Each structure stands twice: as C-alpha cells, then as structure tokens.
Image 1 (cartoon, rainbow, N blue to C red):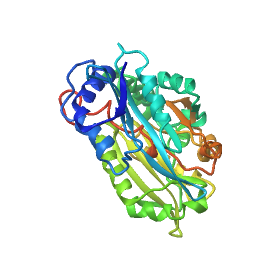
Image 2: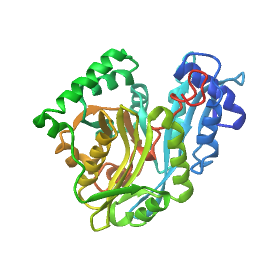
Image 3: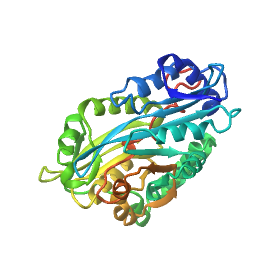
Image 4: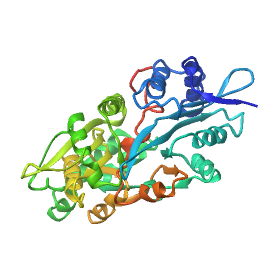
Amino acid sequence: MSTIRPLAREDLPAVAALYERVRRTGNDTAPAGLADYIARLCLDAPWVDPEIPALVSEARDGSIIGFLGSYPRRVRLDGRLLRVGCSGQLAADPSNPGVGALLARTYMRGPQDLTVTDGATDLMRRIWRTLRGRVRTAPSFGWYRVLRPTSTITARLEDRGRPVPGPLRSVGAGVDALARRIPRVSSRLAPAMPEGLTSELLTVDALLEQMADAPRRWRLHPDYDAAHLDAVFTELEAVAPVRGEVVRRLVRGDDGRVRGWYVAFAPAGGIMQVQQLAAVGPDPGPVLDHVIADADARGAVAVAGRLEAPLADAVRTRRCLIRSASWALADSEDTSLLAALDTEESLLTRLDGEWWMGHHLLYRGGDTTT
C-alpha cells in the first residue's frame, strides 16, 4: 500500500532518480540539473498552486515509487476566472502496478475547474479514459506544412531516434535544392512572405496588451500576468538548446495594426514547431502565412503545430498535412467549459500546456543542456 501526497523539496533527488530510470536512460543515478529543473517548474514557478500540487507516491518503506508533475494555469470563460490543472510528466515504478493510475485519479479529483494534458502517451490516454476523462480529438492531431520534402523525412526519422548518416542527409538536401529550381515546384514549396505584413519581437508587455482585448475575441482564453509570461519565456529559452531557437513574433499589417502573433521553436535544419498562433481577427490565415514564410527563410524543412479549431480552415487551404500527435486530454464536471474548450472561440494552446517542457530532453550525456 502506498501513500499519495504533494511533492516536497526533500523528495527531489528520489523523484529525479525515478524519472531517469523509468522515463529516460534506465540509469539509477539522475544527472546534475534534473532535480533542479523539476523543482523550478513544480515548486518554484509563479504558476505553482499549493492546492493543485505535483504528486508523489510513497511506499511503506518511504521510497518514492511514483511522480506526476503539475503546472496549474488560469483561464477565463465568459469573464469567469477558472483554475486549470495541467497534468504533466508521469513516472511510476513498473514493479508497483497501478501507481500511475492512482496518481492520475488523485490529480483529476483536485479542486481545479478543468484538468488537461497535451503530451499524453497511449498509456496515459487509457488511464484517463478509464477514469472517464475525455480525448480532445482535434488537438490530438498535428498539421505539417512541408517545405523541403526529402529533408523532412530525414528530420522525422531522427526525431524518432533513427539517426540518418550524414551523406544521406546531404543527398536529401541536394534533392530539395534541385526541386526548388523548378518554377512550378518552387512556387509550391517556397512560399513568399505575405505582402503588407511586418513583424517584431513579441514581448511580455506586447502580449499582455493583446490579451487585454481577449474577452472580445475568445470566450475561453488564458489569464496571463507578467510574472507568468516572464517565467514561460525563460523556460522556453532553457529548452532551446534541444528544441531549437525560440521565435516570438508580433505580426502587423501595413496600417500598423496588429494581425496576430506566434511563438515557436526553430531548430536549425529541422521542423519548426509552433507553440501558439493567434489572430486578432476571424481569419488566422495571414499570420499562418507569415509563420510558414518565416520558417522557410530560416531554412526549416517543415513547419508544424497542433490542430486547433480556430486554425482548421487556414491549414486546410495551405497544403498542410494532418498527422497523429501526442494525445490531448481533458476532464471537467463543468459541461459548458468542456463544450467551449475546442471551439473557434477558444485560445488554449501548447504554450499553456506541458508539451514543450524538457524533462526527457535536458541534461543528457553529462551536459547541463543536451
């Protein structure tokens, strides 16, 4: 029999060791930095809510046999302030079956108005369905706009842990370069930057200014403050060495008015991953066009993002492929909240979840960043 309780600071070495053994390398010793990273996100960040804590499962002998991360968020629905429990990384000792399900059940029964996760595995999906949680169908898929087809295949293989020899990568890049010299092909693969649009750095102040008008644009939207955004942008930069350069752009029309914004990771020669894309008007197409052109100019092989309801029409008309992604899950007793979650009147993106975090990526090979 185990006890489930909030994560405490003294648990961090044991939690990091468990996570290393179960979710990363299989080693019993966690690398320097991993425990501090967990502390930073689960104990010290401005979004921490003591009523919606990260959880551990403690065995009778005092050993830690399970861990579930927690990253609470605030949202507003029709002006009403609500709390969101963002369920994060799960690590459970395989010799103690059922620990993961017990952690998930305890977390989902917390005081939050809504529980979500957007990086769920097949196992977590099965646990949530057993606990009567819901699969968010559209956000469990991703959209891809291919820019360099042969190199995109290479990037996908390497993302799945299947290294491609350097000579083959070079051949693929050469094939893509040749294809772009064919006018008919180039016009499809190499999009021009949309006319009449300019962009600038998306700062915390600029995003807060845009979100001040959020109630007029979305029924459901994040309730950001400066401390929260400062921490999010700082943590995005912390995973940049493994996820790619952080791109934050505020997009304006030629009249100077804001058209929207986006936040993305742009790994060199890889797939640019959009974390948030928002348009201030009903059509996100121009902002999406800017993202695609920006990715192409940076040498990305493709640009990708989560399929969200406000983007559906725009990605459909821009030669985007739709593929399965990590599971996005939700649970709430508030049926109106669940109904609003995946409509075009909602802004809740990967930036507001745990998908981008670096627990399984950082501090590999004895380095503090890779």
